[in-house]
Length: 146
Figure 1 (cartoon, one colour):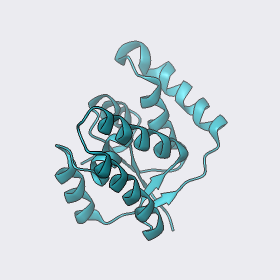
Figure 2: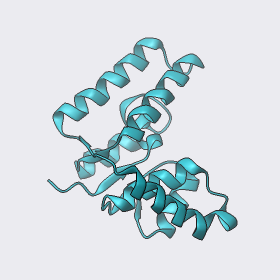
Figure 3: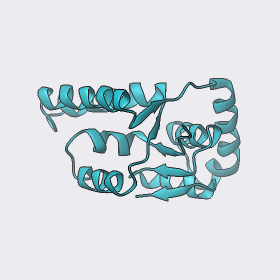
């Protein structure tokens, strides 16, 4: 199965938990029903973001656990598709993006890595609520949603 949609962690966290953008993430997924790439970076970044949200009191510990459980269910159900990563190629691609965009747009390393992963693994669509990542992904030739 070809997977061509790449969610950044902001989209993924909104999809599996309740925040101000959850309805937008759910609405997009109900319209497209396309599977999403899921990398080791997603695993640590999304789970850490959920734990941090619980630590800040933005969600309860039960909500945090339920959101992490939903990631596991989405992996089992095929909504999220494990994508093995060749990190050397991803870091090379991220450095190329940095060379082209960092001096004028001030890119963070995590933004470069997410966009590099999307490009390296053939994504056509980049899903994000992060304005900096959206701008970089668009400049790199990806369709940016939602």
